[in-house]
Image (cartoon, rainbow, N blue to C red; front, side):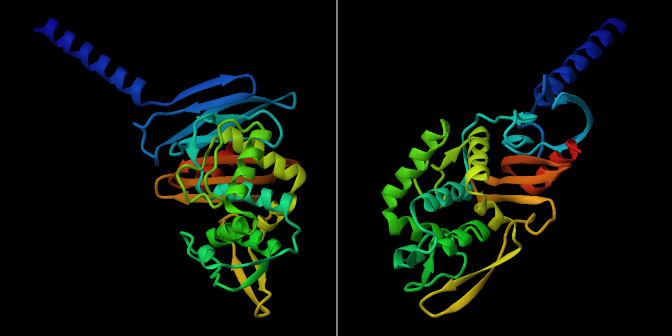
Length: 301
């Protein structure tokens, strides 16, 4: 009887060990890169409490007490223009939704003068997803249409800009820019990001946001603002836009962009100023990208 009881206990312990191995959290630490891996067995609300991690930053050994949500499909964070400190699935392709508008804004800035006037067409107004209350016949500058894309994620504004240039050509330029920047995991089929075929990786978005910070910071400056205004040149009336980004207006927020589709989850690219450094956080496919961003920032304090 005791022999059978012992065998039963051994089998139970083996089963528990297998469950932990399959559904648990694995940490891989290498030099100054810390990759946090999880599996779909862990629910989005699960957390890792007090994971003591060491990383070498700028030649100094830093200690972190991490409290991280495990719900995102991909994560990358660290100092801007430096090797990532935390990565998870950063090479995985993912539908980036309205993060697409970061590239669309870059292409618009490189190919249009900011004061160029663009008329809102019936086609632009019919774009999926409405924001900024655009109406056919209104006229806005490229500057104001970019504001609408970044602040309220207007698909109408993205469509109007692309249409003014030639939509297919505009999207081609977006893909050419991605290739030029060596964003090898990135492809676009629309200027707004409404298509699931607009895909990228956390590593590629890292490249893009670095380029924007280096050469087109105005995009980020716009994204910091809690509110902004655009002017319909046809009627002479201004329209107030309230930023949909929850971090907008916060003192240390240096800019970013959100994106959401039901099939892609919450995507978020954010820059923060912390202790004289610029911290980048990229979250893809999360249930609550803002909460995950906040938790990752705690790891870097």
